[in-house]
Length: 434
Image (cartoon, rainbow, N blue to C red; front, side, top):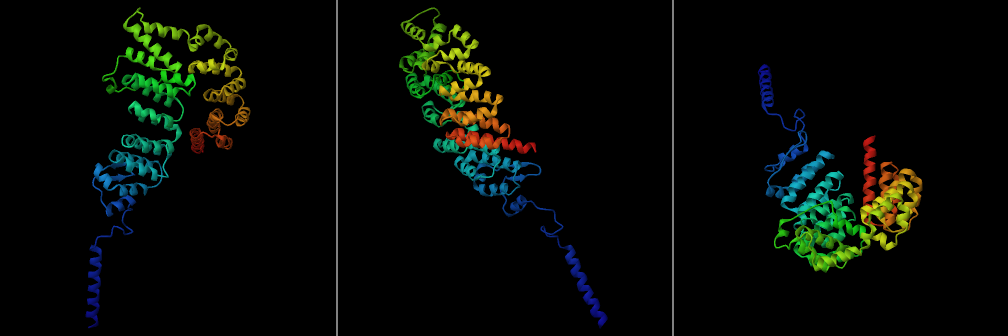
């Protein structure tokens, strides 16, 4: 009896062991391969058309409707990955996919992305702004002005304003930071508006250019960026008529001179050697132009030989008439010989760009002296521009304490953001060198 009982118990144990051996192992058992957070999420909820594999760096995106329907889950899976450029690259790509279907939702995702790699965030922001601009210019402008780093703002503004009808684009120019991008945007607006309505273009230029020095107005007439829209050519007056109408409507002296020169070029091309009543008026106006007199061959020769003496002989109004390239050449030549004196002249004339140019030259010769000089300047745009240039130089030299001291004094919001960006980039360079 005891023997039978032992055999029966042994059989039960043997059957139990066989059943256990034949049962598939659990996917979460210790002997199972490791499962990534993304795989675990996929097991919980499958998203049609979406795959994500960081190891092989492969991603398949679903169609727009599926992406929108499952956006919160897709975003969660990406953000569950280890922080770094791979994860942030995927997030930027995801926002790019989202922006094509719902720019406003993409803007919300961008605002919630607080721990992004700056360059990848800026790339995503650019895509969002350009798409959102077509739906809601005001919302796009807020992101561009308040969130995009200043160093990227100018180029992005130019990208969205160039294809915008000039009547609308002109309203946003004041939101742009100063610089070449703003001048180029104004040039695109002017060239497109002249084809649509020369009188309205001239009236806008009178108002926009009234508070600018001639050097800044000149940049509008000679841009280094081109944009054209074939729709502007539909029903447009020919270039000669457009220039004549703009000349007759304009009141700003620099604008009248520009339109006059444009008109004469068109007349000469179409009617060589022929004069009309309007060409006589135009030529008389050009002959009496202060800017023309200042740009004679003799004046150029004198400026290059002794820029300090040449500039000292000019009245303040004449200095304002100098074209930007001419002024930059004069200041550069002067600063190479008498840097502190040239810097003080630029400050006294209230010229921010020339001040920054001189500060840059002076820093190469005597950093402590120019830092002391710039910090002691009275508040204003001239000081702000000089201090911003110093922040850039100091960041390259890894003197972040002095750079922060300079940045703290900058009152202009855009220039302060630019200085902060330059300091941040300098610290990144320092980390990379370690």
